[in-house]
Length: 172
View 1: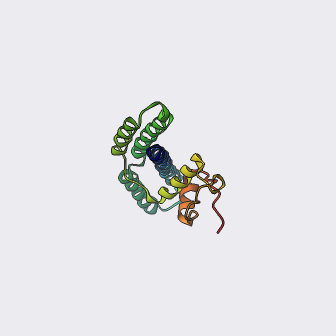
View 2 (view 1 turned 90 degrees about the vertical axis):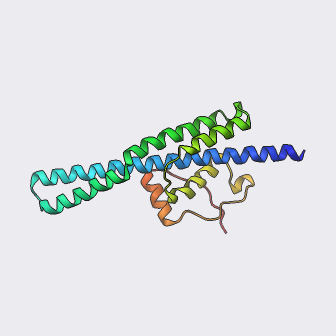
């Protein structure tokens, strides 16, 4: 009986890790995608201002150079595409969770993790909250609540990526 409970707990932990990884990569995808679009939009506006001649060209040129540097260094577009591929793989693994044995799932999970990108730490806790919400790990369902609410910076990141996290935090 004890081994059955242990196996079920291990499966639940693995399922949580897969869903968490899915949300984390999805959030990073949205972050990089929106960062790329925001920088390109600002560059377009600066180009329009330059063409109309309504501002100092030296200032506009300096700001444009800085934005282009950030765009090249951050590689936001490429990272957005890479994270999209990874989060889709996590989603497919979760969808087929019931059809595979635990060793196959672990092997595929490790293979996907090795493809991982640099992480944005401010998106880690929001991804954990989204995972708990998705899997129903809430105080209403008899689980211990998460230790804290999102802090202000995490809320801004979540707002920037356009996600809504509706987890009901336990009132202390």
